[in-house]
Structures are given as C-alpha cells and as structure tokens.
Length: 441
Image 1 (cartoon, helix red, strand yellow):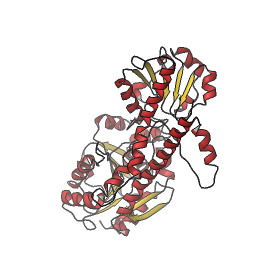
Image 2 (cartoon, rainbow, N blue to C red):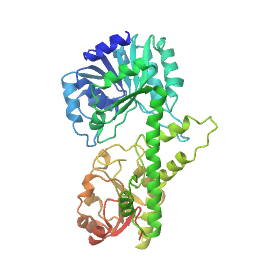
Image 3 (spheres, rainbow, N blue to C red):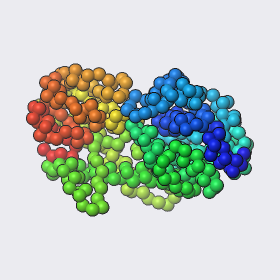
Image 4 (cartoon, rainbow, N blue to C red):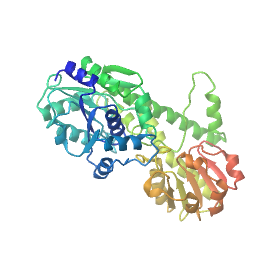
C-alpha cells in the first residue's frame, strides 16, 4: 500500500489499526481510535491486564475520567479486540507501539520490550504498513535500533515495504483522555510524506496542534521537555532545602517569586516519580554518552530529585528526636504510595524509597493509599498507635482529612508534610507538631 492509498483509507476511517502495549499510554490511545470508528486490535502480553481489558474492566485503579466507560463501550461493541497473539496483526495497516522503555541502575536504556515487539511485529507485518512508535526513546534510537531491527525482522525496506515514524506520548496518569485530546504532539516521520500521513491519523483524536518534523527532532523534543521539567523541579527542591535551613517558608517564597514577570518556580516536594521524568533525562544523556560532552546540569538535577525522600527521612528523624522517640521500633504511617495524586501509578515512587529507608532504620512503616489496591483502608484506623504520620502524595482524600481525628489516634503527635498539603498553623491547632519540606522551624 502506498501512502496516498493509506491516507485515503485513514480519511474514511477504513484503515485497520493495531496498538501494541495496552498500559497507561496504549490503552487510552486504542480506545480513542476505536471510538472514532477505526477497526482496532490491541496486543497485551501481561495476562492479568489483558483479561481485565477483554472483559471491559479498566486495569487502572486511579481516577481516570471517562476511560472506564469508554473501554467498556468499545469492548462491548467489539470495536476493540484485545489479544496476546501477534498473528492477528497480519492485516493491520497502521501499528502503534506503546511499550515501556526503562533505564537500568547505570542509567542505560533497556529496550527489551521494544525489541520484542518489533521482532514479533516484523514476522507478521503487512507490506506497506505504517509503524508508529509512541514510546519515549533516546535520541537516535529510531535510526540506530528501530529501523534496522524492523527491516531485519520483516525482510522489508523502509519507504518501500513499510513506513516508519515516531509520535512520543504526552499523557499523565489521572488525565489520560484529556491529555490525549488537548495536548499538542510532535509527529516525526522518516520522510515528510510519512509525517503528513501520521498527522492525518492523529487529527482524528487530537484536537491540539500537530507539529511535523523528523524522527530525531521528535526524540529530542520528548526527552528535552522532561529533562527541562526535572531541572526546574530540582531547582525548586534546592530552594526548599535552603528555606528549611534558614527558617523560611518555601511556599510563601514561591508565591512571591512567581509574581515577578517571567518567573515560574515549580513545586518542590518529597521526590519525583513516575515512568517518564526519572528516566527520560537519562535517555537524553545516553544519546551523547560516547561523545566528547561533559554533562553537569542533567545528572545534578537527577541527584537532587532522587535525594528528596532521604530529606523526608531526615525530617522524620528530627521530629522523633524532638519528642524523645527512637526511630528504631517507631510506627510510621506513610500517606500515599503512588507517585502522583489521584493515581495508582507507583512506578519509581518516592514513597518506595522512604519505606525502604524506614525499614533499614528499624522503624515499622505502615502505608496507606486510596488508589493502590494493597494499601487501601481507613487512614484514621491505621494511625492508631503511630509515632508520626508522613504525607507523601497530595491525594484529594487527604486534603479533606479530619486532622483532629487523625491526631487522636497517634501515639506521638507528629505530622511530616512532604508536599505542602497543610499550613503549619492548621496542623498545630489540631494538636500536632508540624514538620514540612521547605518550612523552617
């Protein structure tokens, strides 16, 4: 199939689509394309997730407005067929790959899932198919890995036997469908014709601007935007530590700084989690690993943000010491385990680091999160007999919490605020000592 034919097929919603990877990125993408009329097959190798999707049940516990209803509808109407079998992709004209691309302990990209998907797809790929990568990649990966591997596994040549491009996702848990509709996308093709064809496809589900470019630029844009955010958060976190040491209040300082034109200081906090920001700066840095370039800002920002759960640990220790309580044997209630409010996504969770440190110190951590299945329950009941309660996530449920009831259950009246959820005076009026990231004593 030529691109002119494929564009005609897209225009009439007759193109047959596939999405490989039905996680936080692939599932809403598949549902939206199915909703607007495309014939959609989704491939998912995680058995539990696949089973949930096949029965129309959302495998995400966080608050995702509209997604559960959309999934149920497209499954019930058979607009979306979910499978683990790549053999069902032999007639697919457009295939989107939405698999994870983590980094290892040395910050090197791990492309096992991507390689596996490409090899499996190549063995069944239809001649003339358009393959689009939505996963975030280190700049240069499309040219150096994706293209040769797909040519090798399929026995076809790019721009002849198949077409190739990348359109990195720009969604956040809790806003998956909203982001998919309203956030602009960078559409990178191996050729301009490919990018134009991709843009025609995405215009059926994206209401925002679509910027056409080449694959390298698209890879750079996605990794740079998350590295930029990481650096800005690291700055906010360092300012929080300065304010804390000097007896200032970072939240007041931030409000006043941001009144100055052109300033937009981000939110400090207990750490940066999720699948994107903790690894995308490393993907960007990896692209020049063998070049004569010495990077300082990106690694430094990663170091600052990774250290924030340790700073929370220091607050807990100082708070306990002020009450004559030894951390060894102390019961600590950790509020929030997901990396983001109103989400169940616990990938690279700062709370995971904190809990590990607490255990290593001999403390007895108890975890609550209203969205993470294994940590649900009554936080008031969990607080009974605890020596401190530590807020790590700004879930809406926590904003409305009765602090007096919380205090009544605590053995030691200490509240540690890692996200600026409460004002110190409010906490103290409920009879608890307040210790917060960025707030001096």
